[in-house]
Image 1 (tube, rainbow, N blue to C red):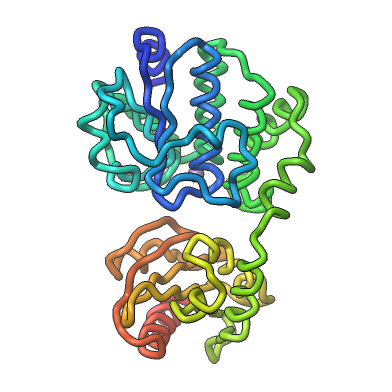
Image 2 (spheres, rainbow, N blue to C red; image 1 turned 120 degrees about the vertical axis):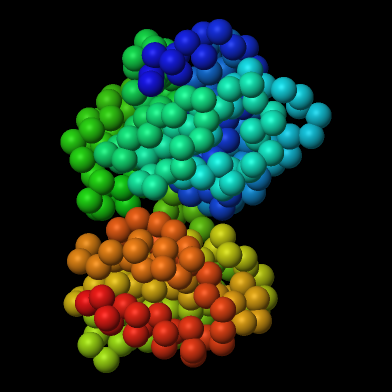
Length: 315
Ligand SMILES: [Mn+2]
C-alpha cells in the first residue's frame, strides 16, 4: 500500500490530513508529522481536526496551523485520514472534499474506507506508519517531524509501558532522538503541561473510587456537576482511568463520565486478562482487547452495578 500512497503524494498538490474527534497524542502528532513532511516536500497541506487542538497538545510543532472547519477550502487532491477506525470519527463530510481518501490506521476493527487502505494492527502507533511512508519515499524527516513521530509513539505506548511497545517502537524512537528530539522536552509537553483545573477535577473524581467485592474491578466517575464546579470539560478527564487501573490486583478499570442527566460514557481498560472490547461491543460501543468504551443510559448507581456484574461474569 505504501507505493500507492507515495504515488498519490507525488501526483497531488493540495492535501488534507485529518484524524479522529477528541484527538489523543497519536492522532494529532501523526497528523502533524505527515502535514509538516508534506509541506517540506512543497505540498499545500491543510491539517484538520473537528475538535481542534486540546491545550494539552499545543506544544506539538505545527499545532497552531490545525483548523477545525473546512468551509471555503474547496476540493483536495487527496485526504489522509489517520488513526480513525471509522471515517465517521474524523468526519463523514471529508469524503466529499477529497478526490482520493487514504486511510492510515493501526486499530483492529478499522473500517474499510478509502481508495487506499493502509492498516497495520501490529504497528505501535499511527505515527509509526507515517514514519514508514516517509522512509520508503526517502522524504526527509526534519527535527519538527521527528518530534511529532516520537510524541505519537510515546503517547500510544503509554511511554513504552503498553504491550504495543514493540521493537519497531524503540527503533523509531531511537532514530528520532538521533535526529534531535529531546525526550525530556516531549515528556514535559505531554505530561507536565496540564491545566490547574484538571487537577482540581481529579481531586473530586478520586473520592468516587469504587471496587467490586472481588477487588478485581475498580472505577471512578466524573459528573457534569464536577466539571461545572471546576470549569473543565471531557477533554480534561483523559487518562483518569489509569488511577483505578494502577491498584494492585485490579484487572479492569472503569471510568464513568456523565454526558447527560441519565447517560454515561463508560471507558474500560484491561490489564490483559479480560477482553473489554467484546463487552463494549455488546453494550453498543467499540474498542479493542485492552481499551474500549460504550454509552450506557441510566442513573450512575444502576449503570455501575450492571457494568460491574457483566464484568464479574467475564472474570
Ligand atoms: Mn493510535
